[in-house]
Amino acid sequence: MGIREETEKKVFAYIEEQGMIAPGDRVVAGVSGGADSVCLLLLLQAYGRKVPLALAVVHVDHGIREDAVEDARYVEELCGHMGLPFYLARRDVKSLAKEEKCSEEDAGRRARYQAFLQAAERMGGGKVAVAHNSNDNAETMLFHLFRGSGIKGIGGILPVRAEGGTSIIRPILCLEREEVEAYLRERKVAWRTDSTNSGDDYRRNRIRHHILPYVEQEIAPGAVGHMDQTARQLRETESYLAEQTKKALQMCLAQTESQGLRVLDVAAFRGFHGVLQKRMLFELIKGLSPTGKDISAVHVRDTLTLFAREGNRTVMLPFGITARRQYGQVVLERGAAPKWQERPVEVPLGEEIFRIPFVCSLGGLGELEFSAFFVKKHWELPKNQCTKWFDYDKMKECVVVRSRITGDFFTISDGAGNTVRKTLKKYMIEEKIPKQLRDGMPVVAMGSHILWLVGRRISERFKVDGDTERILQVRWNRGCKDSETEEKDVGAH
Image (cartoon, rainbow, N blue to C red; front, side, top):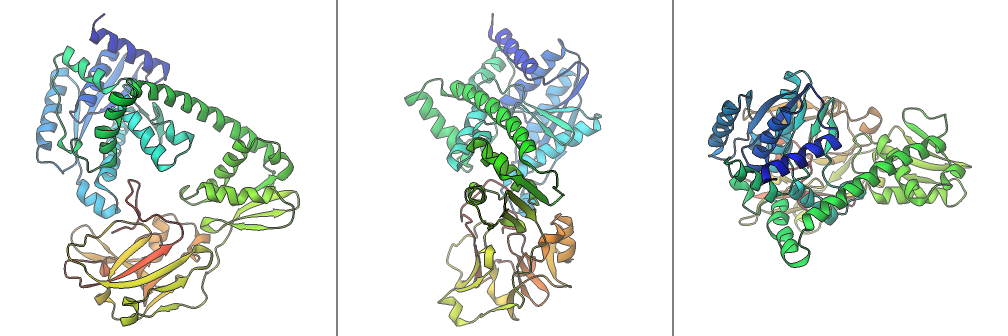
């Protein structure tokens, strides 16, 4: 059996094992023109001769590389030869990254999936096929492991996942990169090379170019395949634990719960293994939070202490969530967040703040540290969610830290080079910030003009630009890490 037959047999078995495609399905393939996506497209067409399916292709031009036009032309010509519908989506990823305050890599990923899902919707609710392989999975596992992930993260990339009402499928996740290229060479099909993948600008590329090759050559040949097997076992373990967590919650939760309230029976809770106890608490706290993010192991550990000792005690959690012990129950509740400060706290701008930082306590939310400095030569503005930088010389009035008041507003970019006003109330509604949390969110303001909704976005009016000579730095000290991140960094410069 040749390479082509072996590869198709392996992928077809994987598609059926994971229940990816059923007869009559409409499938949108995301094809960049690289080896992985071209291999995916050829294998899907081959599978379509075995199981009837409607196949279409979407190519996304990110507007970053000059040779992107050639990539699009190659994919369009390939689709023409194969007799497949071709859709070209153009996205200005650089502008999107600036607008959403995230990396170009993250913005590009979101732009691609948005284009794929829109194409699937046009096809009447089809599935989206993307071209991750086993090497991608190994890179993801290592990346999550280095960052301190749980079983779910170390389990790598899911073969099938839901995105709204659409299924994202990864039919070649079972193939290693060498197998992909060998299949294409066997079929004498060329592919395009993305120049951005050859550099080390992205942390994933550093894992791809340096760590995995070293491991394969010097430590454990076949490591990628072994990691793929481990990932499958971890995903099975996670699926089982998720099922057991759900069952355990059904036995521990009282029937008196409401939308913002969860009541756990202490005796029933103590009857479960510590692994399930932690998972139950994580799911409950995450479910009560507005975004499901920023809930960590420390919050679970703090809440767990309520089950260890008797006595009415309370633990304060993020987003205005409280956990309290009352007799034989532990109650988790997301209530109306109180205003953290009755009166505004004035920030003493002047010569002193250039020498000694000013610290404003936010109670249970940590503290804000204000300092100022002159722009340093060749200083580049970092991206960070917990530290913000403002043009000191644009601040002509008193700067205060306070809770929101009626009339508060930002200035934001309209995407055409202009700035417009947006009320803080409208922003909070658009961001789906629960009403009961809004009063508890501190703001840094000058009059009614919001410089920074702490932890969220800043105003365009006070951003640092090429004419800035002095900078006001505001650091939110609440356990945030001042480091680069590949996740969405809301409100960073």
